[in-house]
Amino acid sequence: MSKTRQILTTDIDDLFNGERKLDDDLLEELEELLITSDIGVATAMDLIETISKRSSSIQDASQLKDFLKKEILKTMDKAPSTVETPVEKPHVVMVVGVNGVGKTTTIGKLAARQVSDGNKVLIAAADTFRAAAVEQLSIWADRAGADIVKHKDNADPAAVAYDSLEAAQARDVDIVYIDTAGRLHTKVNLMEEIKKIKRTVSKKIAGAPHEIILVLDATTGQNALSQANLFNEALGITGLALTKLDGTAKGGIVVGICSTLKIPLQYIGIGESIDDLQKFDAEAFVDALF
Image (tube, rainbow, N blue to C red; front, side, top):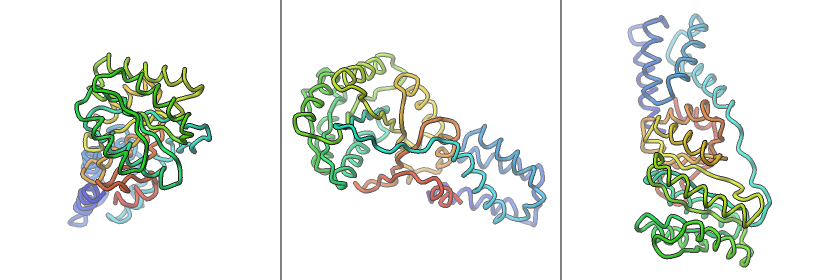
C-alpha cells in the first residue's frame, strides 16, 4: 500500500501546513485527495460530511488520519464477511475476469494455498480462446502441485469444465478451480459462454459452482467497479480477488469496492511470488492506508 499511503499521508500532512484550520477550503482539498486515491465519489462525499460535523475536535493531520481510519473501517464493515469454505466434495470454484487482470496467476496462487493446507486440487483450463492460456495455467498448476485437465486450443470451454469434474470425482479431488475466458466484458457472447459453463457445472454436480470468484485489477481503479457490476449481474459473483495492489496509488479502490458492492473481498494480491495472495483483512488494510 506504500504508493497510496505516500500520497494520502503526505498530502494530508501538507493540508495542515502553516497551521491551517479544518475549514471548508481544507475539506474541499481533502475530498479531492480521497477521490484521487479512487475511494469513489459517493464514499468520499460521505466521509467529508461526517468529518465536517466533527471538525471542531480535529486539530491536526494526526487526528484527521485517526478519524479517517475509524470512519473508513465503519464503511468497510458494511460489506458482508467472507463465507467459510463449505464441505462439499469436490468444492467447485469458477474464476472469472477480463484478460490482463491476473486471473491465471490468481488461480495458481489459490491452488497453492489449498495444496499447502493438505487439499487435493484440480484446475480446469477452460479458457480455450486465449493463445498460451492453457500453457500458462499448466506452469502454475505444476508450481502449485495441482492436477490439470486441458483440451486443445479453441475446444468447447463447457466440455473442459465437464471433463474436469468427471476427473475430480474419479480422483477424489477436494477443490476444483475452473479458469474461464476473459475477453472484454462488453461482449455479450463472452458472458453467454461463461453462463454455459456455469449451467454445465450445475448439471454435473448439484449446487455447483459453490463459489464464483471475480478477479479485478487494482490499477484500473473505478473501471474495476463497473466490471464487477457487469459480471455480478450476469453470474452472481460470490467473492472478489483484487490483484496488483502493490503497484498502484489507487489503493482507495478497496474502500470503494467494500462500500459499494455487496460482495465480500476475499483475497488481495500484493506481489509476484506464489505466496503473495493474502486473505483480505479490513483492519490491517486501513492501518496500511495512512
